[in-house]
Length: 106
Image (cartoon, rainbow, N blue to C red):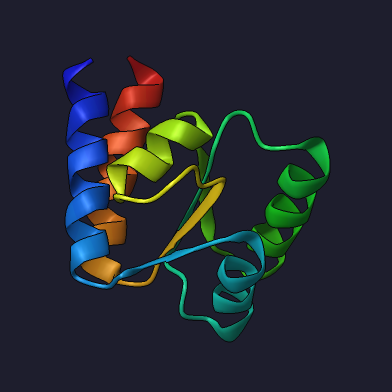
């Protein structure tokens, strides 16, 4: 539970630093442009959205994690529900990746 809170807090911090892009079209554009370092998809995303994001992340070699509900992700960044978040800063992406991997293991 503590790791989950850390992840949400770090997402909020990254958002305030303007290092988070939200929304399917904008996030995929960032992946294609090579600016996205990490993509987080909510666990309640539609199958179509999940496939599209997974395919793009695989093709452009961007790390992707499935984490939280759309309401949780939206709340963490201070907006309404969000399905996809793309992190554009390498530092935030590295720390989030560590936390997400630790959370998924334990």
